[in-house]
Image (cartoon, rainbow, N blue to C red):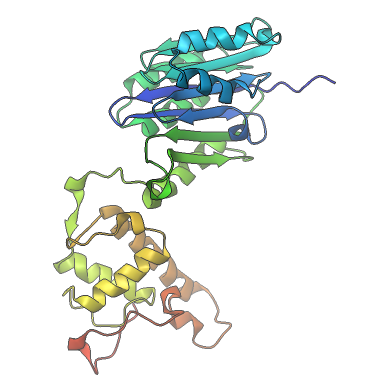
Length: 333
């Protein structure tokens, strides 16, 4: 029984400034992130597709780890594979050298383009414009590796992408110590396995991942927690039930304790600070959650008496009153 072919477009790339290595991919194929992308910090990245030989991933990384460059790795992989004419492969090595291969029996349109620090490849595409747009967009885009990979993927889809349609997408990137808690190199590994608009969904999921798990914001954007900023945080924490003191704009220990609990319960430990400043993204996220809670109270009929008057942060007790607010009524919105 013949294995199913699947149309795919991908990009492998290296960002020397971080440094990091990554792959972005989309396909009319279920869970493409489980087949195509492979990456390892200080080693390189591999994309294996068309009638994919999944062993190209771990074997390609092994060859890269041994010190071979991207072009030599591609040559060795396809030379040892009798099914090479139906394969497609992209590789970038530790130094950012890139290479790609498109087998002669890959279904049209199939091809690739290699540039400085990256390689784009695709098969069963609307045309060469898909790969060309990915390459030009990657070269012209600003931001770091992650921003540029996502931009290239979206550019390929705008030119038609996989001519059979869309189904899944993935973004994989590796950097030394980039994983959760700094214990692995898995900097980013987000996937959309089945969705009518997988690239847009991938971008949505990545925005959440970026907000909670990564530290890519410019430190120059940090704002002091004082005055209007402090009052806004107190207000929003109050709406969510984390803070029960007055909205004074004075950032005391009780305000900080309420904020710290919110940070921990929403997986923002990576962005906790002890210097009296806060990331604008956290301020914005907190405001969105408070607005959603206000909307819930306004539009949802109560089932449990008093339930709508308590924010989610009040489940285990609110943030408490500040010492200066004893006897003063709390405010919730």
